[in-house]
Length: 98
Image 1 (cartoon, rainbow, N blue to C red):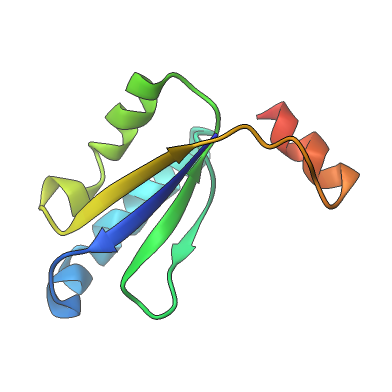
Image 2 (cartoon, helix red, strand yellow; image 1 turned 90 degrees about the horizontal axis):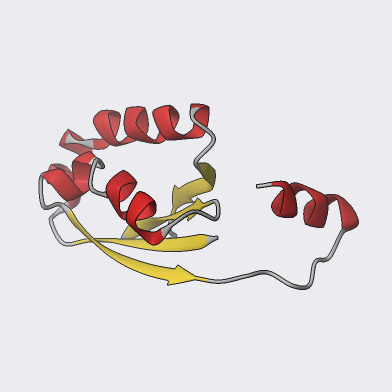
């Protein structure tokens, strides 16, 4: 699985111009089963995207479609990890199915 930290490098006014397209990008990839979770950081300086386990090249191809990347709005910091401990068996079942 991957955790992507998205950090804005443009003012929020410019970020907001691409927000609807970014959300549509997220919706497409949730529907395709690629994404686990996403949301904004607090304070609003970027966001976080969790992507299911897949080949690194496939994950990169997904990120390359994000309008924030296409329009040079944000930088992306990728961390790959394998969760091994869970607070709840239901969460473990959900994560390990991905």
